[in-house]
Structures are given as C-alpha cells and as structure tokens.
Amino acid sequence: MAQPNPKSSSLCRKIGLRLLIYPAVFFVLFLIFRSQILMGAALFWAVNDVPEKSDAILVLGGNAPMRAMEAARLYHQGFAPKILIVSNELTALNKLGLVISEVEIVEKILALEKVPTNAYEKIGFQVSSTREEIQATRDWLEKNEAKRLLIVTDVFHTRRVKRYFKKYLRSTGVQIRIIPHDYGRCVRWWKEEGDLIDFQNEVIKYGYYMLKY
Image (cartoon, rainbow, N blue to C red):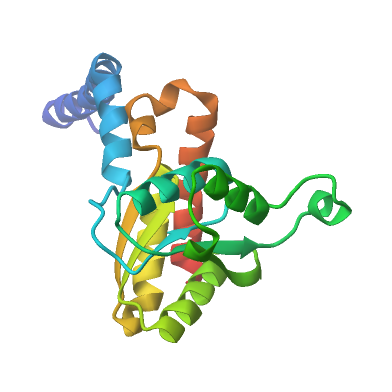
C-alpha cells in the first residue's frame, strides 16, 4: 500500500487553510469598510455630467415630478431653450381617466415652475422602452438639426442611458450629457429599500440590454 507523500499532504493543508482564511479576511474587511465600498460602487456606476449649453433638455419617462423639476431648473439657468417630453405609453388607469398621464404631470410641473408653453414639446407616441425613447429623440434631432442634448433621468438609470443613447445616436453627431436629478442617492443607497431595488434593477436591465442589443 502506497504511503501518503508528506510534502503533498502539507501542500494540501496550506491550500485548504488559505481557502478558509482569504474569504474570511475579505468578509471582515468588507464589514469594516462596507459603507465606503458600497458608496464607491454607486459612484462608479453613476454618470453625472457637467451641464453645458445645449439645444434641448430631454425628460425621459418615469419619476415625472423630479425629472420635470430638474429640467425646469436647467432651463431657467439658460442651458437650453427647449424641453422635450417623451410621450409615454398610457396605462389602463390613464385610459380610464382615473390617473393623469406622465406627460400631463410633466406639463403641469413645468407650468408651476414658470416654463413658457412654447419652450417645451412632446416627442414620440406611446413610447414604452429606452429603444423607443432613443428613436423618438433621433427623429427630433434630425428634424431640428440639433447637436447638443442634455438628458435628465434618475441616477441609477444614467449608465444605461448614456451607453445606448450614445451608441444609437452616434450617426447624428449629437453630443450628449447626462444629468441625474438625484445624485445624492449614491451616498446611502443600500440603507433604503427603494434605492436598493432601483440600483439592483438597473444593473439587471443593463446586462439585459447588453445581451439583446
């Protein structure tokens, strides 16, 4: 019967010990520095461009009140003379007249923020996805020969927006800058259930878009 090799057994013990120690050390370090690590992950993910003078400000569908207020702020600061509102697909409640549409919400907020009615317009029709938002934007850009665009959206949505708007609008020559209205969410996103879900969903959607498009 063959005797076990002492050197081989010693090597196996060392490898096994390291396999136990390294994850434990990593876990302890993560617990100690978890706030910095998680905040760093969100800041790495987020896109937060400095706004520049542009032809228009695009308000993407979703979270209408906050996006509309940010668009109004940028308008009043003179970054663009026009605000574009994506005409989203109506929900069943919208169609029944029980809830006003996102477009109506945006228009009401812009009016409250004293943005003139001739300074904003709707683009697209029954838009239901990022791809359709991009197509509606392309149509407007080509019609108006616009070359600079500010896009207002939620902070965790910014990476997907920048990647795909730049990719599919490259042929138009437009320069895009992404402006999140809620950049501060990056600081403590893991402590709020809504922020945690939003970040998780956007990571999943980003991967889905990479596979599909």
